[in-house]
Structure formats: C-alpha cells, structure tokens
Length: 351
Image (cartoon, rainbow, N blue to C red; front, side, top):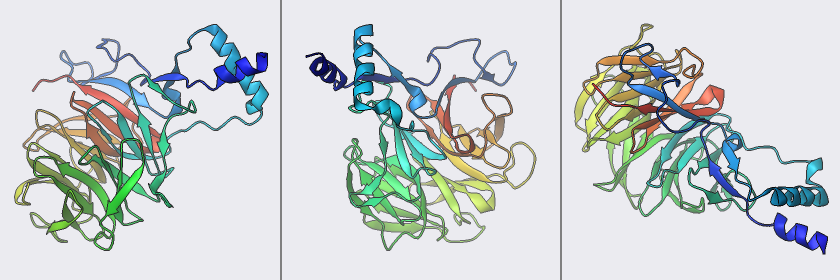
C-alpha cells in the first residue's frame, strides 16, 4: 500500500514558475545605467540560463518526502538527468502572455521560459529540438511571432523557415529552394508580411503569411538599400531595421523597402561598429545594437545618434552578445551567447 501511495504522489505534475534570479521590482541596489547618474535610464532586470530558473513550489513537506521515495524506487538517483542549460543563445522573442522563447544555436533547440505558474509533466524546462516531425534543428538562428499563434524559426543550415505551434509541435515550413542561408526574421503584423535576412545572398526576402515569396529587397553592395551579409533584423514603428554586418552599419527601410536611414561606421571607439549582431527598437524609437567584438550593447536615438554603451561590469560584462529583442513592457533581452545566458534590462524611460 505504501508503494502505491508513493507512486501516485510521485506521478503528480510538479508546479513550477520561472524566475529570472531577482524580484522584478524597482530596486536602488540593482545595477543601473548610466552608472552613477542622477537619473537612471536602464536597470538590471534578470538573467536566464536554463533549468536554474525553475523554482519548485512544493505543496508540503510530505509531498517532498514522497517524491524522494519515488526517486529511490525508480533508481533515478543513480543517473540523474543533466539539467537543460543554454549553450549559445542566439535570438528570441516574447509572446503576448510574457512567455520567452530563446533560440539556442549551441544545442540546436528552443528554450521556453514561462513566467506564469505552469505544470511541467516531467518536471523539466521545456526544450524543443524538432524542426519537422522527422528532422531536428541544425543551426537555428532567430525566432519571430507568426500568424495564428505560430512561431517562425530560421535555420541557417537547413535553409528554411520552420513553423511551430505554441506547444512546440512542427506544423510546416517555407523558403526551401528560395533561401540560401536564412538568419534574422521579423514580421509586419499589419501587412501580414514576413521579412527574412538571407545572409549568403546579401538580401532580404519578403514572404506572405502563407510562405509565398512576394519580393526581394536589396543586393550585395555598399550603397543605400544594398547589403553585405545582413543578419538580425526587426520591424518596429512601421519600419524595417537591418544589421548590415560587413558594411558596419544599421539600415532603416520603410515597409516597401525604401531607404530611410543609415548609421554607423567601422572603428574602435564607443559608438562605432566592429562585429555587430543583434538589433531591437523600444517603444520610444531608441535603437539597440550588440557588438560581439567589444562585448557591448550600444544604444542610439531614433536618428541614429549614439547615446550610451552598456557593458564592462559584472552584470553587463557580455561575451559575444548576439540577438536582441524587446517585449511590450520595454524589457530588453540580450542573448549573451558566449556566457550561455540571456540578460534582461528594463528601460525606465526618459530622453
């Protein structure tokens, strides 16, 4: 009878919540930027690694004892599963429920951080590895919210965009035989168009929500509207922002591909670019760019004027930062690729 009770309790789904390592409330003791400024514009908001961010909510001590008894019976203590840990996060997105999806190139998978209390059947952090029912991800690079609750994921080596539902089930793909090496991806929800940076082809390919190619923006070159290995991109404020990596600049285009703005130059001074990767835009139009050579997050105003670097202390000491994304509360997420983590900062507003 005792064994039956142990098994019944042990099979119950543990209740988990995701936390980022700190309480999400303003705190004068948290790192903020500009450092030592009278008015802070940014504050540290958390860090995500993997299963370290799981916080078990035990119902009572009795359940904890029964759970341990089950582990002994099953022999789980002899070979415990290795914790799911991000290795080289590359990009991510936050949905309308606040769920964070992170593409981890190092493990060829997608990590899911759900801040809401959730039931995890196996007591582990959700990690998705399948691009199709029969094919695993190879080199996933970026992820965007698609139509009808879909998630759109680029895979550079598989040469396509893959569709997953919000439970991680593969439901289709597009771009095969059209895309050469897809990297960045973003969507204009108003026009229902999907932009994909095809890095090897030095252009931006635009698809409709059904995956049909509509047009191609740009070609290789250094003129306005031309690209040299474009990578991450984002759509915000009715504009497309593109990291034109080997031209060491950011370009802003309108929804039809008309050039609006370019800024940036190659150099070693703060505000100049060396090896830029990620890009995001907040609700006020400030533009964020990561530089993986100098390990900084660089912040510019909507006109492309340099405002502030973040990096160089314990929290902001990035190593090979890659993709960037921002949620609807102006929380900024940096894929700190070399450190195997995602760092979150909160934009506090201000000019």
